[in-house]
Image (cartoon, rainbow, N blue to C red):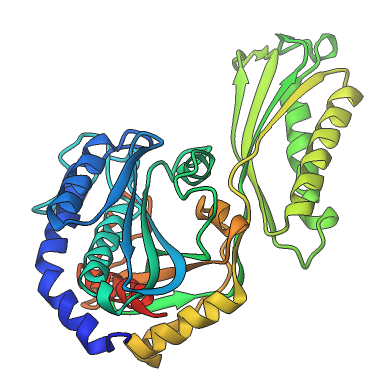
Length: 394
């Protein structure tokens, strides 16, 4: 028999101080992608103390904890990330980062501690649970190729995958106690673009004897924006951002030999994604050749589009309303950011929802990846409780 929401909320209240301490410990000692050795060891010690079975060492630092219910039912998974970012924290907290140049600026400390709390509650309620629950503590979300793809490649979930997977992510656009969800296409793919234009350097007073890669780069940058403005289907969200340009050599009176351009391309359609890659390559080579220059184009394929399974997302939304109340559940728009949770979503029904973490007392909400990012810890109560509620539901 499924526990009532009030029972889950009571269990959350019992463990909330403990899980808050776990979150603060993780926040104080952040570790970068694929370096989460101490974080992983810390969480495995807790799982051992609580008597929760797990396997670890996946992609070196990943953990999969398991709760087997007393009744037959589906196998379902829940996921959180472990890694921090190379950012120097600027907050003044009693538990601010103690590691120079590293910070949990994307809320993965919240995700991991909340997942642990949900796992502990599910373990307490396993007599009421139907099926098997797997709680995935994943390394390396912030760095290609992404820990999700590597855990799948290592078969951390076995040869037969779970019937569904759910994850949450902090969202400073909503206040603590609130959540947001977007069924269907939700987040974009993300690919990195690296272009090098090679011309012929020389004296700045003698451009007719040179092939100026800066002028070629200026033309190329404008031309590449036609990808979104005039080539992409307007019903397929696409963003091309060229965020870095450097001459290799050059000075006020020197035309350089080379110019390097770097950026990202994002879209929500996998077929168009790879068509766009070819368009970028062809446009770059054509413009370079027209000026007598040469070009190299490297596109590092990043995370795929993230699709929230419609049926699962509606089920999750209904559970949110039951647990939190309709006024705390929000429909949110698509986002052009990316997430390696998309690798799970390619293989099984998945739902990725947002956890409000903004303060409700008027304090400003800084965005993720900011050195000032911080969460209202009241959000932990929602994070643990909702994930636990989703876990115990049949």
